[in-house]
Length: 411
Image (cartoon, rainbow, N blue to C red; front, side, top):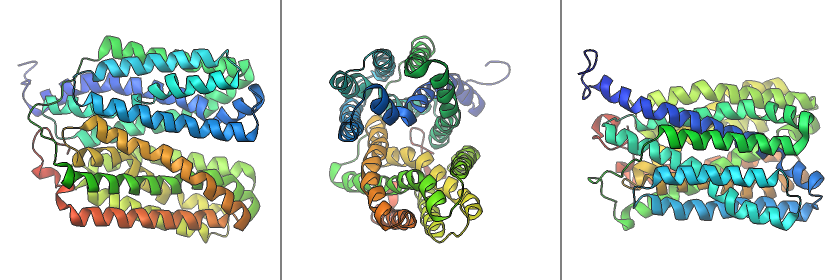
């Protein structure tokens, strides 16, 4: 009993979980900020500082995500079998710091590629392992609000990306790419310090059994394919936005920044809102609803005649992102109980796959017209929507109502 509150009461459970999740959120913010200051300017760095040609830039931007997928997948499987998740978080943060520090000084293409495929790829495990760690901590505390907690962490990532690009622009003006990468190094070191000083090792719950591969496998892979298709639509929409507004709708380029910034700002409260809804409604239904928003958004943008209409439609886009990306990892973890690291990694790998899919579609829309980028986005979201429906119908137990979820399952 502490201050009249039993440690076994809901308030006591929430307090103990919060003492761990708050430092985890701080770590997640700094990791997100480190990627947000570097990611948008990677192509510029390679072309101006490294003087790499277009083919080399393209190869670099594909090789990095592929190496990250392989690294995160291997670590995801390993982390679910041994109580090493905290050590993996620490190792990944230190790898990110080392990779960023080396990139601040190295300008040789092949050496940078080697760094990207090793240290930077290892640092990519921070995101899925953070989500898996949060789930295991909540399971240990007896909380049934894992989906809301993970959605909140995903919201922290959105906040970091609202702040990151302006910070990066200032750093580039003040000290160039060396200042940019050294700042990213400092952010990774802050994240490592949080892990070392504030996080305890989380052990996988012994009572959770893994589902038979024949039953869970198809549902998981179908869901990941749906996430990849829908996120490809999102990536394509972001990449095409400035071109669509300026070339097709004859708006000013700055309007694209305003539109994308508005979407990012709307994502933050909507992720919290969908996280709260996840405590009352099945995750599968919420994600299917979100994918429907995605279909509607891309179809209506393809029909837009003025930039203000595109801006107004960002409420639909932010709802789509908040539902699919905010709750997607928790949904994958429901499909793979007992393997939160692998589930988070599979769901997280949908994004780099999506980025690879979006590139050729953007090139095709440059020939056909940028309006067709959003037609393609609507088709991609429709395919993802149908895959999610098929998963929900063939595996109705994949998204149980939260009221029926026992301790140790997401809610």
